[in-house]
Amino acid sequence: KVAVTGASGTDNDTTPTWTWDNPDGATALCTLTGPGGPGAEKPCSTDTSSTPALPGEGTYHLTVVLRDGAGNRTTGVDGPSYTLDTTP
Image (cartoon, rainbow, N blue to C red; front, side, top):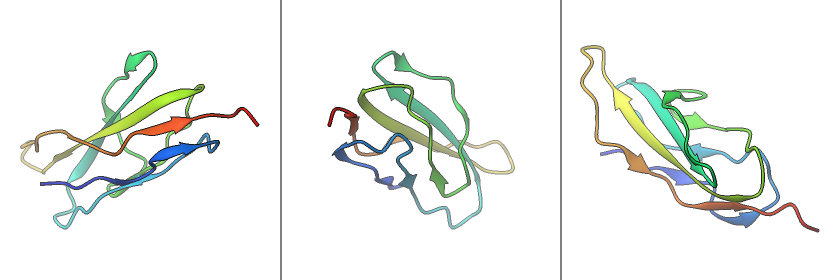
C-alpha cells in the first residue's frame, strides 16, 4: 500500500509537494481535492511526487493511485491535508 507524505498543516506555499514510495516503478495518478471538490485524475508530476499549483486558499489533499504495466490499480490513498492561507 502506498503511503503519501509531505504537505500538511497550514502554510502560504502555493505549490506544496506530496511524496510516496513507488518501488515497482508504476505510473502514478493523482487527484487533487480542494474547496471546489475533487479534480480530474491525471498523471502526477513524477511517479514519486506531485507539486500542484493550488488555485486559491482553502484545504487540499492529494489522492494517489499506482497503475502497473498490466493496468492493475492500487486503492487510492489520501495524503495529509494541507491548508493554503496566503493572508499575511
